Length: 210
Image 1 (tube, rainbow, N blue to C red):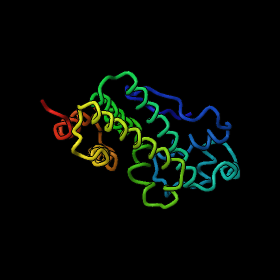
Image 2: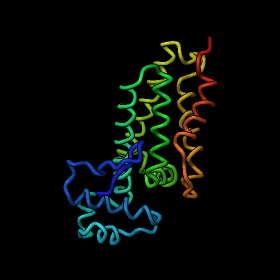
Image 3: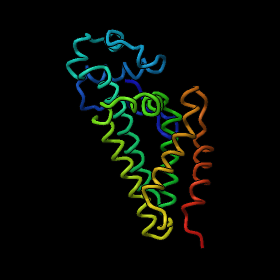
Image 4: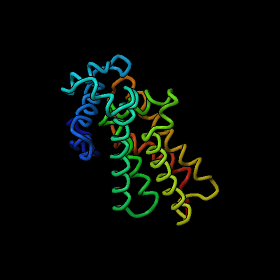
């Protein structure tokens, strides 16, 4: 199976072990092809050949090629959410937890360029995305982020006079814009440097100072 890379650039198995083997092969095949080609130029026949399955099997598990793309994205998002939850459990204080989450998010873009291209460049221009499981997972992730901000406001480390939703959108926008050029032009993204810069800019505005 094609791996996902974690924050330390270590390989994590790609694909839900509960998927049928054929479905997992198809999802891994698309992910592999996306490393070299744009989604629009990839055919279902090519996916089937790369996966070593029949083209008909693709339509057994997926409505169409774009549904397959959404399910590949959902696999990445599942890992991102799991990583964020793990980071928060091992970290004290809302600001430190936010710092961890920002680093994890930027690391996913840096080490998993297929994920970055799908989420930042590919899916948002198509209405079907907003009814997909992938989008529901994005909403779960952003709700998790919002809860961290609200927690910081309650504990007195994050300003309560700025709406938590505005802070969340600022954080997500900063992450995406900081990684967008690297994603488009296949440039290196340094998670340590980028996350530190994003945190310095945002935390100076949202943190409660004595």
